[in-house]
Length: 168
Image (cartoon, rainbow, N blue to C red; front, side, top):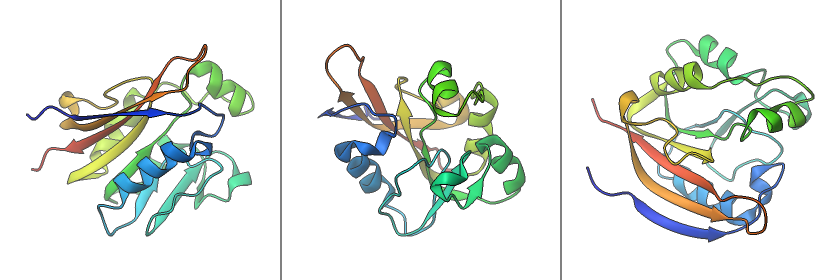
């Protein structure tokens, strides 16, 4: 195992993650490695500037390709596989309730297992949140790059983790 690449970004923390231009740019750059569709499981308001983005969101307000919860989408995906996924759920249960009109988005353990099953070997997940490794070695993933985003003030830093699935 190689040590992950480590990067530092100064930028804000907003209701919609990709309001922060520096964070959006990093995620887009990480996704451009593949010339295939990028699955964005918690798409939200902002579209990514990538070749082809498939957007999943609970709210039809943002015109997703699939309107509904991410776990339901993954169950319906069947044998569909992706090379790159963006995993940007609400950072915690309180924010989940606040941003999704009282609906509880839920715990993510089962969802993470399903996400990895839908990822091609050698593919990667670009995850955002307060955890350094969203998926981990136990699911066959290895942290390749880690971005620390410092929003300053009373808000704790958050991370962009880039994890790659071990080749089969």
